[in-house]
Image (cartoon, rainbow, N blue to C red; front, side, top):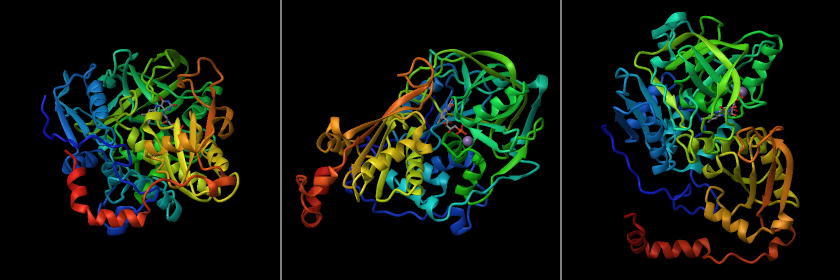
Length: 522
Ligand SMILES: Cc1cc2nc3c(=O)[nH]c(=O)nc-3n(C[C@H](O)[C@H](O)[C@H](O)COP(=O)(O)O)c2cc1C
Ligand SMILES: [Mn+2]
């Protein structure tokens, strides 16, 4: 095993990282995609570009010689847990039993810098700056840009047909001991077309390789791919599908977030790139595949054929959905680049190798949706990694009217990006940094009466993956915690014991050298 690049930054001091901004974001990033601004970056970065970028900034670890069987998944976990939100991308090569060049990457975009690069923002180390940049882009100049079809691309460098199909030609990892199989699709996009409208959906759903040409996909009830598949099955027809399991972060983030029903994730991802994605029509069903993807395979879900699927680690950090019979895909085409890179998201107790970036994007999406719904005075939104991203969401507001905090909490709970599989929504005042758990716990501890200030929403959209649910219907309860100063006596609420910003600045300036010396990282 070799580490070509050893990458290390001292322990992460949660998202705020020692910075005290009193909830205010003091740096701005241009919302314009980089390419649109300076004309560089002729095409959108693909997986390899991001690997190279990570390497160029010292954020890539290389591991040669690891086993696909319970080593690569565990190493991904060790890296992700060693330094949450700051861990390097890990590129596995010379995988046991596979030719050199058949690679796997974990954590491709899971730091601020790599995510900023993927989205075309300037580099920053501050997650709240990125959240704000995302939201500014959505607010100012974001447009959906539909993909364009091209005839050829790197994905077609190798095409295996029918009897030549073998999913295990790739080093499909066995991630954890208790997993029910080798999962080829984790950091993936499952592409299907609505038979009535022609809308193409690309969703991230886990995909197991049952055998050389059979795959199983688990899709939660209500997810777009499931709604589409049900339309075919209702007519007793096979459902065409392409699984892309080597794709760039922007497309992955589009696929794994709640993009509106009827909007193709390609157009959302293209909007962030500022240019259309190039897609190639798949051979059998004409489904659009990303031309620069690493690996994709094509076939059909069969209406009456199932196989046991699971258990598999889930985003909550558990195996909650156990083993069930799920539809299978008969795989008839495999497309891949030379020396392909399988992209992997290793499911584990959070934080994970994708959760930091997911928190940033989901926070930005929720902020965008609640403002679009008319909410005023939002100063921050943060989804916490420890809350499995979806289950502990904090929104900060400048309270402006009675009921404002309640409105904010209800909107976060009810908007499309905040609704699925949630649990806790905490509303805080604008002097609280929502990404800083010390701030949030302080607010919950000192500005909230649990009896008066917690509201419940019952029968909300959850999933069999919710560890607290054992049987259908997959609905759960949300708690909206109002941890803002009570509106009606906010002016009499005890004052915070701290120096005024002016006083603090004056003292900090006078004692700058001593402060720097005393607080330097060791
Ligand atoms: C790494 C990762 C794995 C995921 N696995 C699944 C899954 O197996 N099944 C599922 O329904 N959703 C899964 N999700 C969540 C969906 O991708 C997400 O809900 C997305 O909105 C689905 O796309 P859709 O809205 O087009 O249905 C996963 C998300 C991530 C980040
Ligand atoms: Mn969708």
